[in-house]
Amino acid sequence: MNYCNQCSGKLTLLTPNGDHRQRYVCLDCGNIHYTNPKVVTGCLVEHNNKILLCKRNIEPRKGLWTLPAGFMEDHETSAEGAARETYEETLADVSIDELFAFYDIPHISQIYMIYRAHLKTEHYGPTAESSEVVLMTESEIPWSEIAFPVIEKTLKHFYASKKTGKLKTHFGIIDRRNEVK
Image (cartoon, rainbow, N blue to C red):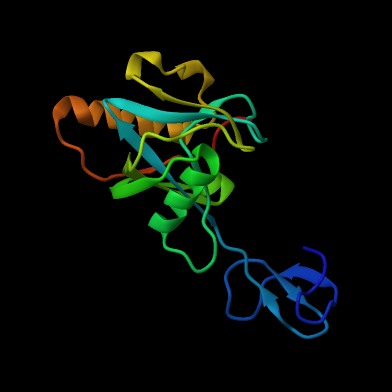
């Protein structure tokens, strides 16, 4: 951030009085600009023992497979966002069943919420965001071509849970802040 969204003054990174971390502060009007994690929400859509996956047609990770998911918008619930993102990426109209996975990903300041869902109709297909949309069995999933670690973790947890017959909400952390770069 360079300029204040209140007065257009120059921003400086400093620790405001009473705070414990640096924030962008406007030197002209004193407005403190807080940044917060982004919430990503999406669906694990199951139909006839298959999962709906889409091949990304946009960056990041264009050409790799993922569950339909994206950033939550203002004035929507996480479940509404998950259904909207699923439609935007797959043209699938879904019913949300329940929250399946919740991941904190602090190294990229994101929170992922993945809902179990089912198709209302058997209509789905590619969009501007997805070059392919396919229902796949576990053995058909191209595991080496999954776009994001959080999606691979979600799918693996889903299939492990199905084998035990206990589909409960999974909470986890994917934290790469301390990995060697």
